[in-house]
Image (cartoon, rainbow, N blue to C red):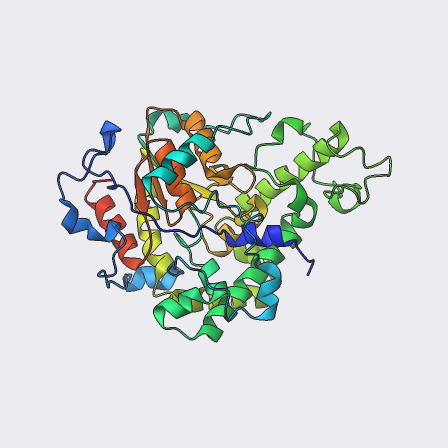
Length: 410
């Protein structure tokens, strides 16, 4: 399997690592855009929205949901690198310079003010407007989800912090994480051109679509078109064209078009990309992770599916994983039906705050945005945009989120 740089791996593992006080998660008054505090519920009924160890719910899903869904785990603010076996160490990077999270500020008001000053809207480069659908006009609410340690448990499996927090066998937990990581890279490399695209990652699948001339790709040979995604190597031959030149950009756009086709084709059947043995291994692995993480993903799915069932709401994913491995991750965890590819954004290059900006310009300012995540970067970004933030630190927070949605408070 090809070796990927540590920065890639840092972004695959999606590091966000501080826990701050959550602002009241805006329920009854959510449409007023001021988001004071809960008036209907009273805060004590929703204690789980605030970091608190008193919430001992294990978030059991019902048996139907359990048999069809998968799961993930809970988050710990220190992500210890102890107990990481050698192979994991190659893909893990704790170097802050490669970490995609915004800033490790302490959760106090000064730091928030400072970060507000620092975060200007950068990276307004050329890009095609994100795809919008006709139903966007009926939209009332957009739910912006983080992926790792919010919907799925991934990073804390690899580091062993999940095992430590929940008293699980670290060998089993880390082993599951490494096996899943291997599958993610396998799908990204084999089917989604990650070897070509690792160095020319995009925020959104449509970002290079304006360079696509619409050529029929059914007999196109990606392996022999001379494209090289890395800066130096292979870009001398005249067939390749200069990196960033018209020819090179067109070949890049072809790859992202193909990535989209593969994602759309396999979003409800990732097994179609795998050999029968790997398909079976994936099913076993997902079931194993579901058990190890006490139905974390199964619990998160209840909220995702409830939002999806509403005509006027939409789920959008913003992850600090690079776009291509993020797509592989979404497919492998069985979330392709919930997140159409046009609703997936990677914050690796531009940060969450700029991603939020793009999403607001896509869906408009009339809709209400709700941010759901575990990390400091999405909380700061939510605050920047005056969006309510629902913190996920344990199973109980996922259970309360589902209750709030069921009661129509969110």
